Amino acid sequence: MRIKTTSLLTSALGLVAFVLPAVQMTQIFVYGTLKKGQPNYSRMLDPANGRASFLGRASTIDKFPLVIAGQYNIPFLLNIPGKGHHVQGEVYSVDDQMLAFLDRFESIPEMYQRTLVKLKVEEWAKEGGATRSTGSAMEAFVYSTTTYKPEWVTLQSYENYDAYGDHGLEYVTREARED
Image (cartoon, rainbow, N blue to C red; front, side):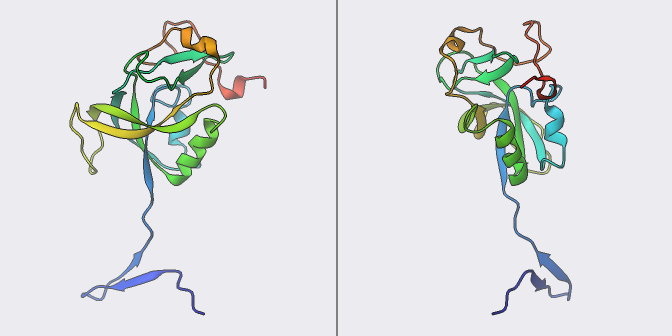
């Protein structure tokens, strides 16, 4: 049995090109510490985690409660559509390796669950790829939670998370936690 590991194509000019499998890219909406300027943004840039490309800014079409909770002041998007705010965040295109890293980082499925969310484009920055108009609708995956403490529903809800905001709830990085 002969196994072909690489496909070759020869063009009319006699040039040889390698046909590589297409890389699967997934769109992710981030609203918390993974956004630009936030404590975990460097994880989106680390090539050891995979590849992530910033596409633009968007907000959720449905309202959701975005709360800061737990002993480490972690931002959580509670999966309760219709309550809270139209949450603002960023959209990234990530490869399978980055998606797997994010699933581990977000403690799927215990802490967060990866679900589809409908978004309204606020600003689209992706050059050379698909363009989207301001105000247009799209879908992306988001890390939200259904596994929250009942009292979290009563916490203040935010439209836009900033770890350094005036809420006074300092985010504790994983490296600084005593687990």
